[in-house]
Length: 110
Length: 92
Image (cartoon, rainbow over all chains, first blue to last red; front, side):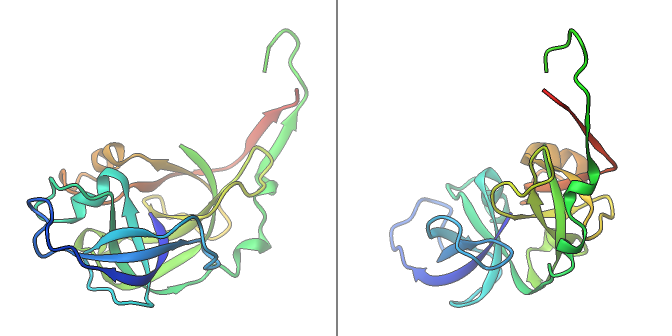
């Protein structure tokens, strides 16, 4: 699952069977600092998100499982609207404190 | 599975029904020295991980569905399945 920002709407009149009434939105994937990650994608909306909102979405096969019926050709679905992301405390404890190195073991190829 | 560090929680009110009552965290993949690798993503927490913890994240929908036991229609793809105490990397 990833964060994203809704940047537009997509209207499609002719759609695959099972997608009637499904709303599609154009979203820009973001990281935790709201920096753009990759290119915009189209996602099905399950939470009535609107343009400009910060959302999270699920991609791949699990995206279709957010819809009903779920056997539909969808590979990104918005599953939540973000109220807040708090990541400011994380850098106080770098991950490197969990890492150690050991001397090479004779005769064992790494 | 990926080694990640937990950056912090994501709070949301409007969400898909399967996410109700589940803790969602932002995680950052790390390399074999603990440095950042690629961009962050979100994962559902099943092991009560906290900010700064090094965790194991599974990113495979079928495995997640088997673990969460919520039926076959679960739109969750990333799940935190373990808290890592230490990683030892053998020097080349």
